[in-house]
Image (cartoon, rainbow, N blue to C red; front, side):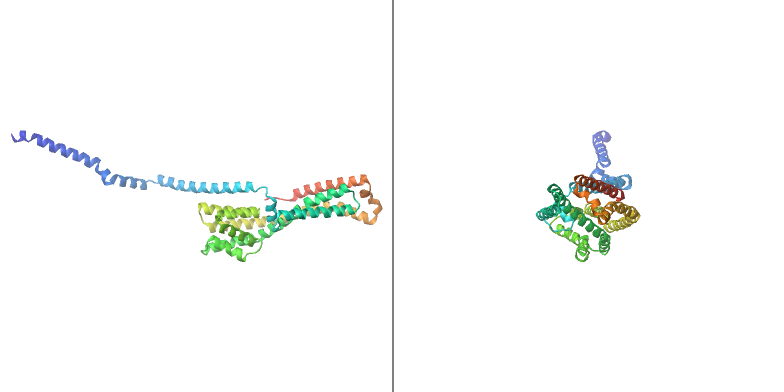
Length: 327
């Protein structure tokens, strides 16, 4: 009788125990956080997701390096053809474009007066004046630019070594550059001073170093700008990178000296071949003036002299192209 009367109560108790067991099995891990703990333990135990994370970080750093290189390449393409003001700046001069124009006009007038005063016709004097006004100032800029670049290359590896030693000693990159700007040799001193002044007005240091290539269009300056720009964006061991850069600069310097030594024979031969016709003409004019003066007194001789000068100039340019090696 008791079992029959308490049968619904027993069924309710059994149902409650069953529901509580199911809740304990399925809901308790979610509410207590055990499932999250197991998931974190499984994630930490697996090596493949960790490797993927590292690869993702490396990929992001590689993408930053590629973006830095693309920015530098675009900037260099924009400055592939420098303006007149940039050419004057690369030559280390403080001229303005107005002063350059006045100097060109003055050289043209002087050349026209000299040639016309020597007895040549107005057309020949005009041609010489035009060539002197356009070509001579441009050649002066090229000569000064090349000489300044050679001086820069002579002391730039030492400046990079100073930066490397300063960084290893615990100094920031900007303070190491200030040491070169204060105690370095020209033209490295003025170039690093320009970098510091550009960075002071708010431009990032990587972009300020990129301006160095605009004022000093050399591969070595481009290397330095790339290293600093990548380090500023992607990070890395700057002292090691600049140390490797210093080694590369010194190896390039040695290679350039070796190439110059090996090409000196060809340059001497080209100089002898190029100077031989004017030297022979000068000796003939000294010994027999009446024999050779027909070249500049007779119209046919003048035409022959002009043609010979053009051919000799072409030959000199071809020989110069053959003996100059790019590396």
